[in-house]
Length: 274
Image 1 (cartoon, helix red, strand yellow):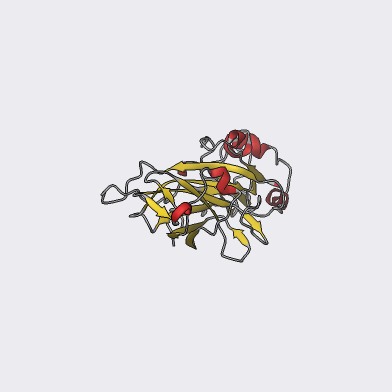
Image 2 (image 1 turned 90 degrees about the vertical axis):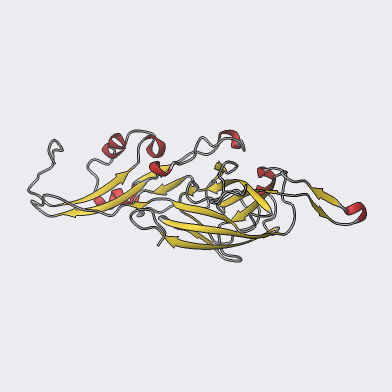
């Protein structure tokens, strides 16, 4: 408490922010916190927000807004009794995490995954009310997976565990091509040529030619309710047909041409799946 202007002999309720700053507040965390001087704890819970930006001009190669694992916004709270020398608090991540497992890695290389329709803001301490029907970020950022070799080698690309994050989001009725449901655009390239159709309808999907698929992060025929500090694991089970030529085309297309399942877990204090 030295130099803080607080009374060391008094009791306090303390709100904690980790990894804030310019990325989320547009100013330093200290300057952002100064804006709440004189407000009650309840007011801070309700009013404190963090905001992020999407890709410039929605470019499919712009990953400048990617959130490194050591820059994830974290929050917590603690109660300090009068005269208490030390306090402890459990910080939680203010974002959802998306992992992608390629269950067909021996047939298709997963070359990239990007986050679309991310909600641009969140209640820092989870106490505010947000209008999730507002404008979402069309493309947030993506992860290039072409150098992520599967453990054990053999020339196969690995899964994505960590690196894809977004704020909480709620959508009552997700749709294939809507502009509200947070989704992943997955790039898959066959390892060998794939021939589909017959006669004049015959088409060849060439090895190494990436196609893109949209997957809404929600159960089939159910609402999307993305929560902070949870990891959503999407497992690719099969490829029904070639996807779109570009991420932007997949974004407005159908998600029915990829077979997958989604599970979710909480994260513990060390960021491990429980």
